[in-house]
Amino acid sequence: MRKFFVSLFLLVAVAIVPGFGQETETKVVDEVVAQVNDGVITLSRVRRELKDIVDAKVAEGMKREEAQKFGDEKQGELIANLINEELLLQKAKELGIDDEVEASLNQRFLDLMKQFNLKSVDALYEEMRRQNVDPQEMREVWRKQATRERVIEREVQSKVYWTPNAAQLRAYYDKNKSKFTKQESITISELFLSFAGRDEAAVRQKAKDLLAQLRGGADFAKLVAENSDRPNAASNKGKGETIPLKELDPRFAEPLKGVGIGGYSEPIETSGLGLSILRVDDRQAASDESEFKENAVRLAMLQESFPEASKKFLTKLRADSYIKISDTYRPMVSPILFADERKDKTAN
Picture 1 (spheres, rainbow, N blue to C red):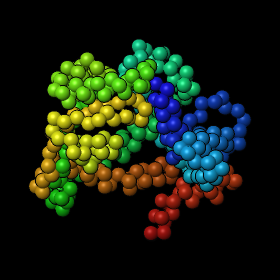
Picture 2: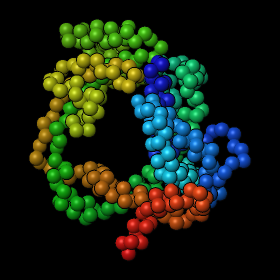
Picture 3: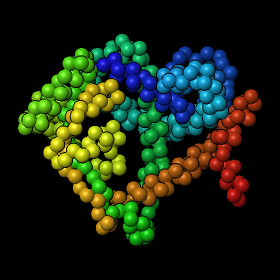
Picture 4: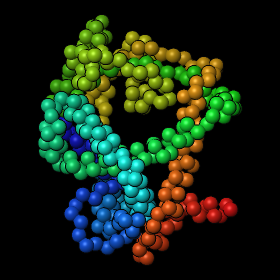
């Protein structure tokens, strides 16, 4: 459990590096770095975000002096990203998606509680605090993350996905048939043992014992139902999906090399959360034959168009907003924040 919450705390800290952070402390009179419509980015907030960046880099093994230099060099980018984040959060209020975001947050904590066999959300919060992780702070980070994602999904991804008509889809497919050939894939099932609230050595020994039983011919579905810590293990018997090999997480792909159909991997540790024993249910060879599937073609077109569409969306948000950056910080922020707009002017 300790490893899990330490890892989770670091993930939260690292997630702030792109500039999407939290401001949960009581606001006081502070220097305004930037005004964004009715919102402001304060110097104290920027300093907190920079500290989080530095601490995260130190936790990754970087010397504090180097980490501080890295953070200082990222200050302009950080402020630019905070301004973009503020614009997205304001857009979310305009769209009225607060209830949707809150529901997703509640579900995320419930899934976490079930995954680690805790009886209630309060028990989860208590365990997080015991490991010096503030659940409300984490919730706020996740809230902003979920809000940004919902806005982008609704205003960019969904629109780009549904824009192509039938003729455009067919034309793209005919021009890119090599993208729609059958890829080499693998179908796997999992028996997961959580470290949460348990002695890790005992969990590792249990994993070895279960693996020996499985390789000796034991019933996989039965052992999963009796031992797996996944919330739905009893109903789905550990069954997983068919995944293209190139999309399989390297942490799993490497141990599965050479494992034939019906075979098992050695126990695989997943970021301090627990151990997974994977069974290979099937392997499918690649094929040169292409097949038109509307969803696959739309997704391919979305993947290709999304970066530019996202940039244009943020550019329009900025153009339609009042943004005033303090004279002290404008030289380091404006070239980053308005880089796309400058490119467009140069191109024209």
